[in-house]
Length: 277
Ligand code: SF4
Image (tube, rainbow, N blue to C red; front, top):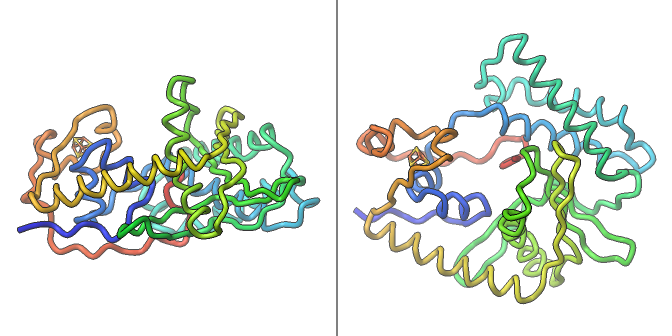
């Protein structure tokens, strides 16, 4: 029986389908939850702390305030399944929090937040590209000195090598597309802030890059629809298998698709920040 394509596409779904079609199917179509991982939950925590920091007036955005905001974010997250599912003991929790605090402090090596003019935090945006609904979450939208839009995406993983930087920036063109469709203007700049390395990678989106992304989304959607019609989502074993939570269902890992429970209701994301890496 043909499968039903997902209702929307997001940057994470696009990269998931490109990385491994089976993992995409299990997550986006079958709605199977992936077990929480410490790096992803740490990303959620740090994003939430920075969201609180930018909720303060500019002059109050100090390192001390950010540390207090991290405490507040942890108080909000510690009873959430995304954190409790990690099942950390006291020692592991202390290491987890120390690492999150290091990332928050390192952020101040990248920029002085007192001079940032945010106009939106953790913005959930949705637009249409032809018949396809696309959505994404912008960590921070701000105005530069000339009044241009700047999109900032925080990254808590390691920064890519120079040869892979363009690929990462291709992903954030998605946010430029959302701004163009919803606000009618292209951002002047999109920046990825790699907190662990104190590094920023920046790009200036163009109409041409938006056109290219629209074409890519259209082609990818056709591939998803085709795969749904044929019920043909093949596993693609690779390094990502080390972090994949679907081994029980993956034939490439000795699992079986017969174990996939149906139907599974796709639940809305929790209160914390989604897709933080
Ligand atoms: S284990 Fe690897 S091949 Fe299997 S679904 Fe996950 S990412 Fe794909």
